[in-house]
Image (cartoon, rainbow, N blue to C red):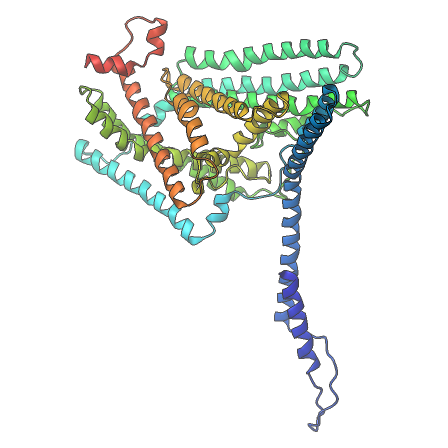
Length: 543
């Protein structure tokens, strides 16, 4: 299209210049002579079109590079199926077919995530005034929460002072959090890197490759279990950290685990492949590359990433300010919409009517918490660190709000974690099963995600109530197969949002009930069944 516009512009410009005549002083007209002069407006227009053409060619090259790996996977799969079919038809030995299949799988495993220079979707949408207005509406709702809190405090207590006791409590004992983070960071920075360097230095020369790899792996897993496994759990339980401080420690524990695994997983196959092919010795990753990876907002290790030329510190400041605003937003939601309802509910006898009404009442604060968590972490937090590190690939999420199926929602809600699960759990699982059992690989991802989510909430809230596990491992799996990518149209988007609202209401309702049941009905004896049985069940019966 840009080529056609340039051609039309050039032809029009040339025809106008050919019609231009030189006139003598006496007014007689001379012969027509072609002229190549252009007005400044025409020059600027052609220059803009040329710039746009170069930009589109750059976008085209990026898209082709991104699609190359996916197309290669599809072609490899087609070739592999053809080889299976041909081998069965010709009754060829299974060993030959197995070697060819293994080679094809090995080639498929070499392709991974491709990082390209791209902006976050909300940054692009906020440049449109219509979407910016939605952002302004949420700020207006925050102002209403502030005014309502001031009015209630003035009526009840005769004062106009906002107190943030809940925030102060939630982020208490922060010095313990900082100390625990420093210990986990130093371990992740030193031990996995030194273990890879040690293994990579001696692996090519040793005669017992498998035994040497197993010994180093066992030692590494032991250190990983002690420092990144047991130590954070001991810190949050023995230190009796409040909920928000626990979230920081546990989420950082999981992040460091995923980062260190990606670093080892991406580099070890390079050395094994080089040794098998008798190729040139692979260079070890630089320490600076690994250090950059520990802070950059991705869980997939690469020796280099696309980088921006400079840092926009104003953009960083705005994102951190928005994170702070989201914290206060969450505070007012809990104070105005959750605490008054569930405090009074825990003192009343249990009834089905009260339970149902409370559940639907919790959908509004649950939806607010969902949107605030998405905006604060997946957009503001990750973009702030990406900008400070000049990390250019900002696709931390996609347009999950337009999803017509839960299968698409799971892929687009959190692209950072989804990429890690896809490349290191789903694809590796299928690789070991030689491309079979796609459903089993998908179920393994759901089960792992459900276990990790429930692990986080159990340690951070201080009690076991497997609501999140059931939503992920049971309803999540069912919706993933029922509301799949074949469902299209606005009706399915409405259904997806409806179930999402109800799911958030269930979580807020049940977890808040259990929180107050833990306060009003303390344990009489600390047996195993008492610890794993939700207190809200027995507490309701006592009421």
